[in-house]
Structures are given as structure tokens and as C-alpha cells.
Image (cartoon, rainbow, N blue to C red):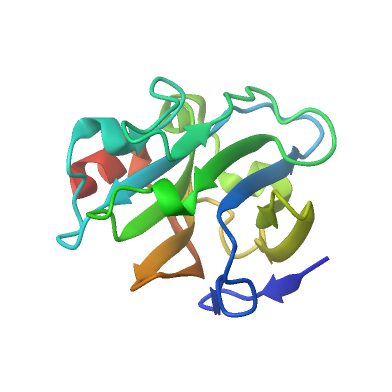
Length: 187
């Protein structure tokens, strides 16, 4: 197990691992018994202006791969069943379009407003980063469900590029804007 992050923490992924290239961002959660919901993970690949350079840089269940083939969503888990990561994003850091400066990782609950679903129905939610080549987890950010109980969407974290380095920032910002609200922010 790697570094356990707190909200607002930052870790330079390249500091002790200059050859790091292929990472897996795993996001997991458990649904509190008696509830059911569909959590969707999305990635917004934004440039210096904080916007997507093209719609195809919005990675989600209907667009699983970035146009530069550097980021891939491995598929939608509709129920959170099973142990471990429920949804995964693979990223090849060296292949990311040079105009991309941040990868923003968002989780949203499908039809949250209609179904009256919220993050308080989840337990053990986390995001972690794994060095795929070395097969080891080197950081994890666990979300505190009491802090985000009635949020319907969450920015889990950001990968931020500075020169050749990539830094992960654990944000954990809960909202009620829906996935469309995030799309409106970054388009």
C-alpha cells in the first residue's frame, strides 16, 4: 500500500519514479445495504484554459478512449458489486497530448435527482493510483461519506502536468450539479 492522502494533499508521481508511464486509476465503492445506484466515472482532459480542446477529450461510458489513445475508461460498472476497483481508467502519461495540462476525475450518480440518490448511500469510496508496470499501488484517497452525504457528484482528484512531472491532487469536492454541470464547466 502506498501513500494515504487527505483532502487537498498533492503528490508528485514522478519524484521517486521518473520512468513512470502507465498508471491505472481505480475507483471503488460499496453500496450501503438496502440501496442501489449507478455511479459513473468520467475524465475531463483540459488544456491551460481549463477547457477541453475537443469534445473527444471527455472520457466517459459513451466515449471510452481519448483521441490520442492515452486515456482509456475500461467500462461502466452499474452496481458497484464485488471487491476492489469498480471502475478503472488507464493512462499512458507519455502519450497524453502536450496541450493537455490536467486530467479531472469526476464521479456522478446516474439519474440522482430523479431517483433521489446521493453519496450518503455509499460506503468505502476511494480513488487510487497504481503503477501498472510495477503492479503496486502508490497512493490512495479515501472519501469520508459523512462529509459528502447528500452530494450527487464528486470531483475525486486531478492529475496536473508541470513540465515533465505529473502531480495528483486529492480534491474530494462534492456537488449537486450533475454530470451535465461538469460538462458545461469544461466545454
